[in-house]
Amino acid sequence: IRELSIDLGGVGNAFESWLILRGVQTLALRMERHCATAMALAEFLEAHPKVDRVWYPGLPSHPDHDVAGRVLRGFSGMMAIELAGGFEAGQRFQEAVELASVGASLGGTKTNICHAASVTHTQLTSEERRAVGISDGLVRVSVGIEDSEDVIEDFERALEKA
Image 1 (cartoon, rainbow, N blue to C red):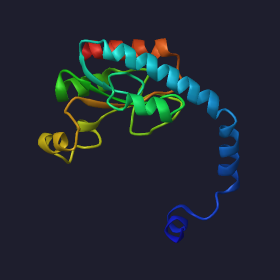
Image 2: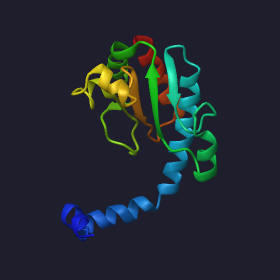
Image 3: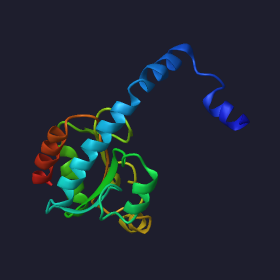
Image 4: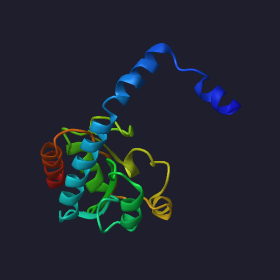
C-alpha cells in the first residue's frame, strides 16, 4: 500500500473523482458497444485474405475462447491482428487508417491501433520480438465505441494499402 500511495497518491483530486463518477454512469453502455464493435471487426478481419491471424477471445478460433465465454460478460474491445505482409504491411496499414488513431492508449472511446514492431518494440530485433510472441506484422487494436461499419470500412481501406 505504501508503494502504491507513493506512486499514485493517496487520494484523487476533486475533478478526477468527479470524472470517474460521471464515467461510471455510462460504463455498461460503453462496454456493450466496445464488445459489439470489436466482435464485428474481429469477424471481418478473420475472413480477410491479408490477415493471417486475429487474436480475439470472442472468436471460436481463439485458444481461450471457451474459458473467456465462461468468465467474461462480453469479450472486450481489445484484440491483435497479424498481417500477412509482415513488417512493411504493418507500417502501411498503420499509416493508412483514417478513423482509428495510432497510439498505445487502451480502452478509450476512440479506436486506436499500434504496429508493435515499429512503435512500441523497436528496441528489439525481429528475432527477439518473435521469441516473445510479437510477429513483424502484429497490430494491436483497442476498439472504441464508433459504429462498427465505420471501423470496418476504415480497416478495409487500410488493408488494401497494406
